[in-house]
Length: 418
Image (tube, rainbow, N blue to C red; front, side, top):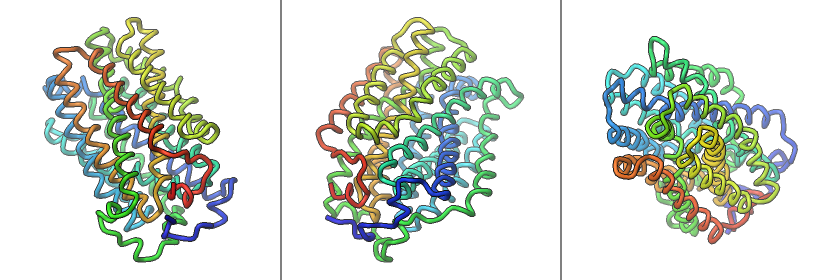
């Protein structure tokens, strides 16, 4: 089963191991976009207790709020899917404009209902931008360094989380409080205005025949790739049940069950993110050296062990040390799954495969789990509830070993046939 979207040999630029000047600029642009995407995502986790107090939302209500906002990540399916029709470049441009606008407006919300709606709309554009960035990263960089590039872009998001953790405690004490966290979102528009003129369509997408760009929404389900979509959707679903909640509710746990202050939580998250950052940037390189499956084993182990420790340890030092591995795992499981999801499908279906497996089916766990977690908290507590969710990424790792092939160092035209 070959990729009908273009010749197997592709172009010299795509096959070269050394990055061109354009590829270096593109890597920087994708990393900056990932930085702001992660900043906005992480902002909600940092302001949640303050927002609940300001807008009079209970603990159970916070779960419903996060679940509703995250519903936008499922709706992102429609926009992410358009990358296979409109092209990668126009979708990336539109998504950056969209998430910037709705994130800024979130800071002006008069009540929790408007905040929830605006943040849900922002999530549509945020996740569509993220998935499109991963497709571009896979298609425009050489096979031997593809994992490294995907890892760098993903780790840039982790750096956005660090900056968010560092500035949020300061912004919470300004006149606008939690709202000021969202006003910073205008910065991506400036970056986009400067960088978008040099952005090109990916070589692999441009080489497709016109009919390949007009596939229907359900076209992939009539191909042999449908089984792979289901496999990856299950892996994403299981992984998200833990990773979506591990960082989102850690501040709630730390304040309610360990008596930590906003500043202490901010310092712990900032320290954990800083300590994990060098390892996060190295995760993609690790996948290129030892392979996707062995790399996945180490990364998922970090996730499981880190989350258990972050929700069961007693001392601040132990909590922070565990949080290092939890943050590292939450960030780098994305590197693993982004690599598999972009590498195991041909160009004409790559955007659709990512949209179906991640944005639609996989995100069901992402959206429903916060509501379920917060419903269990009154009975079992934050620590016991969240530490139990680590069972699911352990199952996801088992599925990876059972059904997914190794893709390290192979061209996309080859990995799409595995």
